[in-house]
Image 1 (cartoon, rainbow, N blue to C red):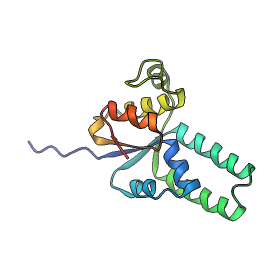
Image 2: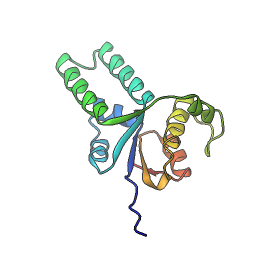
Image 3: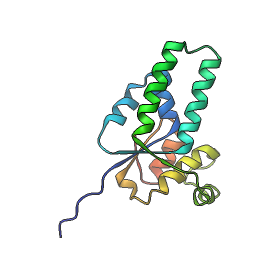
Length: 144
């Protein structure tokens, strides 16, 4: 029997997307251009939008820079499958993770990745957050 390997998934976490958009993180850009379907929690886009609003409000971003960032954000959002924050995800957040303590929003990201139902070997978590990285690795995910 010739079973094809499932399509690799790349779970995009908020800190990575913010790093790409506001700091031009080339490692994140490279990771997002790699093979695999992009997925993210709806939380990723909410947190990223708030970071952009804060950067604009503090005048860290000019109007031209803001337009470019919003254009890139929309491109990434259009090719990313968004995972709604369901009751099942919130229930998972209420249970322990391998490395505690972990913040609620990070737990939502991990629970969202778990909700994909894929073997962790076929999911790459793209993050810049240390605690999330450690937990994702402890759960068996590939992390970039």
